[in-house]
Structures are given as C-alpha cells and as structure tokens.
Image 1 (cartoon, rainbow, N blue to C red):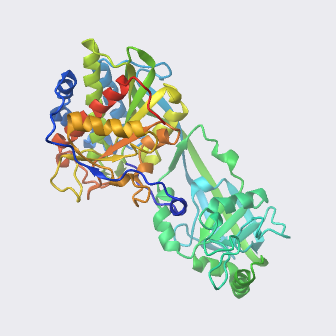
Image 2 (cartoon, rainbow, N blue to C red):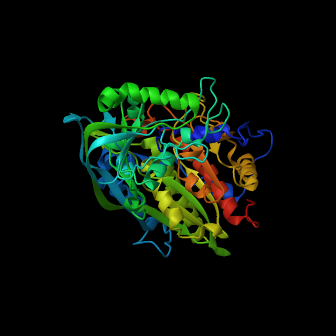
Image 3 (cartoon, rainbow, N blue to C red):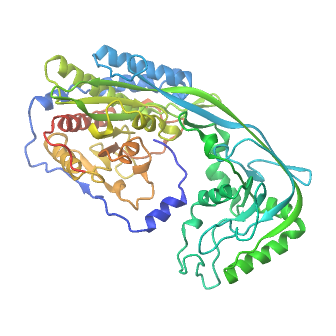
Length: 532
C-alpha cells in the first residue's frame, strides 16, 4: 500500500458537507446454513500452501524488494506471467507481449541545485526545499526580489493589483489575510478560503502573471521537510504520457524562517510591518527590496517502462464485459544493502490473485466459464503513486463503461492491533461509495460462503488514515467504476525491512482470497449490471 503524506486539501474537503458511508462491523449469522455447492468446492482449491509458495518467492531477497524500475521488479513480473501461462490464462489485444502491459514512465530528480544569497550558498533540505516535480530548469540571477504579501489573485483581494511582476522573483506567505478578530478578508467569515489550503492556486496565479520563481516562507520548515523529504531524496516517477514540462513555467522554492531573514536583510522589519497592515486593513501591500540572489535548478529526466501483468479468463455470454481484479506486485526496494521484502505489502495480495486466477482458469478448462470476462491485473508502481492502475484506466483493455466492477486486494496477510490473534476478519473499503448493489452483494456472498467478520470502519469519509485513496481501486472508483478494496490492517512491520514471509498468516490469507473468488464469480455471473 502506498505511504502518503496527508495533504491539507483533503482535510479542507472533509470540512465541507461529508457523506456518511457505511462504516459498521458486520458479523455473519453463524446459525444460518452455509451454501454448499460446486462453487464452494472450487473455492477450496485456493490453498494456503500455494499462496505461501508464491509469497516466499516474491518476498525473497533475490527480488530485491520489487521496486519499480528494478531488476527485482522485472523478475517478479516474469514470475507472475509464467504462472499465468502455466495455468492457461488468456491474453487480450493491446498487451505488448504475452501478459505484459508496458507502462511508460519518467523518473525525475535534481541534476544540479544551487541557491545563493549575497554570494553565500544555502543548502537544500537545511535552508530551503525545492521539489523536482514543481520545477523546470532555471538559471536565474537578480538584484531585487518583490515581497507580494500572500500571493493571492482573487476578485475580492489581489496582491497583484498595480504590480508588474513579469520575469520577477516574488516572496510570499502561506495562508491568507485575516484581522485580529479572526475574520478572513476574502470570505468575510471566520472560515478560510481555498487560497489557504491549495498552494497550487498561488503558483498558477504567479504563472499567469509571468513570475519566474515563487519563494514561499515556510514557518514550520523542519516539519514541512520531514513531510516532503521522500519527494527529494528518491526520484519522483510520473507516467510518461504526462508532459510535465509543458504545464510548468514558474518555479517554486520553500524557505526556512532563517533563510528568509537572510534574504530580506534590512528589509525584514518593513516586510513584517506590511504583512501586519495587510491583515489589519485587508488591502494588499508589496515591497521591492535589493538583494543579490542566484538560483540554478537543472533536472534530470530518465525515461523507462514498467509493466502491469494481465491475464484473463474469457466470459462465455458477455466476453466484452469484465470484472477487473487488481493487486500491486511492486514494493519499495532496497536502502543500501537492506531489502524491504514486502511480504504482506503486497506479496500477500499478489499471491492470492495468482491462485484465484489459476482456480478460475481450471474451472474454464472443465467447461465452467463465467458469463463475463474476469481480468486479473497485477499492477506495478502502486508505491510510487498508484501509477500502474492509473496507466490502466487511461489505457483500459476492456472499456471502463463495460467494466462492471474492480475488486482490489492489498495487504491481506497479517492481523492488526485491533484484532490481535483473530484471523476471521477483513476490512472492506469502498463497497457502497458508488454502487449499493456491490455493497449488498458482498455482504450476501460473505453470509452464504465466507463467514468473515467484515469491518467497514476504514470506509468512513472522516477516517484519518484515508485508506480509500491509497490503493489501486481508487483510480477505477474516481472514474465511476464500482470498486471494493480488501485489506487486513496496518502492523508494526509496514514499510520496514521486517515485513517478511514467516510473519504472514497464510490460513487467514486463504480465507480472504476465497471470499474474493466467490464475490468475483458472483459479479461476473450477475444478470443485471450494478446500479451506480
């Protein structure tokens, strides 16, 4: 599962009218009789021993943590493809070769980065922060900087009014002006506007006015760097289809309070006074101050490809319609000589999907085919920003309007602190957000076959972990495809070198995998489409 730094805009959205999504714990009725049919018997072919075999291979040191772009990641993809071939899964038009969907990527990182104030060099991460994805190549020398208040350009308040900043460097505060009583000048209330939470609005305003560089005063610089450090230390990865250079024209750097003071020099008192006047009066103030300032920013962009691994069992009645089952097979790789094996995250989900795929293919060989096509999509690049699934939804092998649902599996091999030694549970996320039918069907299948405690507490919109937004199903859901995400919770080994195979509870994993199999089969054979 992708690790994210929480962004304030999410919380701002959450402060608006929130929808109440289903967040209860549902226990099955154990007094009712289970369904005992041929499907339940096929489900028993999904065995803990086979899942364990796959996990031990995928999470071995030889695969080097399966990081996107690594040799180990390629080996993992080859292993999955061989399994699909051995079990007789079919391929689809649009795949590059065999079971692989090539994912074009660009890796972006700093080649050269330098900032000088009055001839003195300042250090990235210590004195300032520049994030590669927010910048383009820049070689700039100037003898003046424009303090431009909060950098806001709104009909109700604009720091740009009467100021020409084309080709200039501007210095701005975060947030927006408000008076001593706490009333914000833009909204006229004690609630802030979007200018306070979405810095990209300020950057876009600067871009539209021809600003070359925005310097942002970051009062909580150490905390900010801790949140953003991974965006600088490791290369950032983007889909190659996105032309990032074409949408940028204004660079951004975040300054610590100390660096800001050195930049301002004798103008510091004047700038502080002008900020106070802005807050007091609600009228913009600017100040042009002299300083020898230099910035050199040069990016290195490396183009590579990743691979989604996709196999299908073709539907008998509606072969052009599909249910997509997804799990990401990448992890976070190595740090020095230490290997992050990612046994639970997400070798557990990958191995489970491999065994579900094999079981469905075996059923098809015996003449028992689903009505709709079942697509088994092992995604790459989830840890870098859900990239494999993002590429898939932009380049779907089955059109999204003919994709009945997405069933996503991420980290189903461990137990968390809430459930301890209890292995008869699973967290269910997103089932009711798009389709009430998907939610109802999942509960029905659980009652008839699986009998797991289904905990929906992470599905609440106000839930602080925001898991709904953090795995591959989200890219499907964002485009209106009913989606459901199965998960067994976070544990002390999450994204650590100790996430090893011997800690996975394979019996528990098999129980959840069987439930996913029963649900996917029910979706593929449902007569009516899911209501959306």
